[in-house]
Amino acid sequence: MNKKGFTLVELLAVIVLLAIIAAIAFPFIQDSIDESKEKTYNEQARTIEHAAKRWAADNSSELNKTTTYKSVDFLKQNGYLASNKEIIDPRDNSQMKGCVKISYDEEYKQYKYEYSTACS
Image 1 (spheres, rainbow, N blue to C red):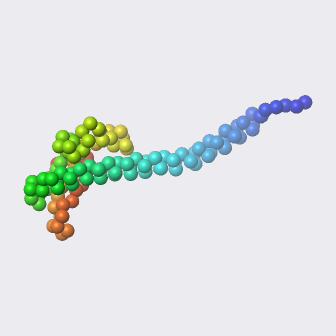
Image 2 (image 1 turned 180 degrees about the vertical axis):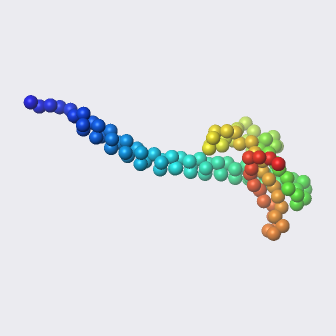
Image 3 (image 1 turned 30 degrees about the vertical axis):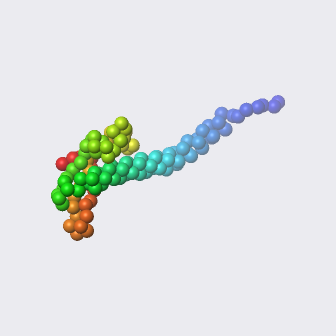
C-alpha cells in the first residue's frame, strides 16, 4: 500500500519548528524596526533644526545672544519648511509640532539649535 502525504506528527513537528524560528527572529526584527524609526525621527529633527539655522541666518539681528524658540508652525509659515507637508513622528505617527531652542554658547561663541517637543 502506497500512502502519499504527511502524518499528523510530521505536520506538528514542522509547525513547532516554524514557531521556534519565529520566536527567535521576532525580537531582532522588532529591534531593527524600532531603530529605523528612531533614526528617521532624528533625521526629521535635524531637518527642523536646519530650517531654524536658515531662519537665524536671515534674521541674525533678532538673536542678540539671547535664547529664543521657533516653532515648527512658525518655520512653515515663513517658508523655511514645506508648508503643504506634515512632519510625522515615525515612532507614534503623530505630527511633530515642537520647537527649536536657539541659544548662544559662550564657551564656543556660537548658537546652538536643539529640537524639543515642548515649547517653553
